[in-house]
Image (tube, rainbow, N blue to C red):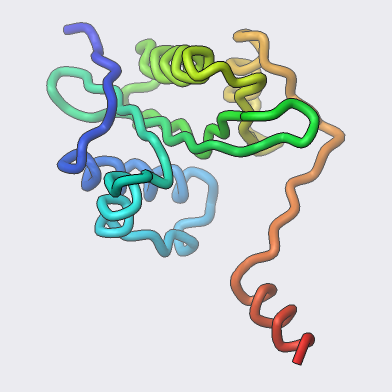
Length: 160
């Protein structure tokens, strides 16, 4: 059976949560997932959703997902950020990742974005090669900067 790429529904969030944890495990960050299925259901399906999610189904089972949200570039304007694209290990190499990325780019193009952007771990060479084969530019000289929750707390405490 062929795969189907579609917009995620509220009832898909259990499967999306499973995929998020699988990605965290793959990235050796298993304990970092704090988000819950209830968070996804609340934030993704409210009047102004925090994100848009696509799922990939194969043989009636959700085997992949891509989660996007809007950003704004001071150089380009409206940008679509791809937070995560994950396909289960068992379903890799069957076109689901390509289908998900295609749907993300199609979605961004229809919205008139100037850029679709995402991060990839430097050691994930298969993903880097896949993205480059699709025309993406991997900016290896840029670094991701995060101020995590503990850092935010320390920052705020220093203001007092």
